[in-house]
Amino acid sequence: MRWTPVRTACICSVVDYRPATERDAEAIAALHAESWRTNYRGAYSDRFLDGDVYEDRWAVWSELLREIDRSHDTVVAEDARVIIGFAHTVLDQDPVWVLSWTTCMLPTR
Image (cartoon, rainbow, N blue to C red):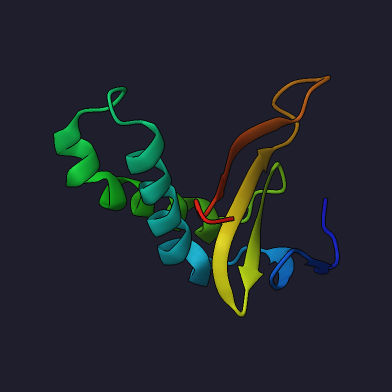
């Protein structure tokens, strides 16, 4: 499924949505790592969250966004060209449901 980038207004700014590209892997990994540090403290070790979580997420996202796979779709949300959120869906893994693998937004949003 491919779509046209969309623009919506929120309280203080305009948010643009577009398909993610390989160039977005670093920003997505940083946002994902920060989300894990904020929300998974206690579920993952502090050593992992305070250390290797970014590298772990970067390895995952750089591979996901490098390979073209029509059963996966990643969309980023941008405010002033800064990625403030993303959503990743997996299609065709289940005959009925679409899996939302992960969705993250900056905590201030």
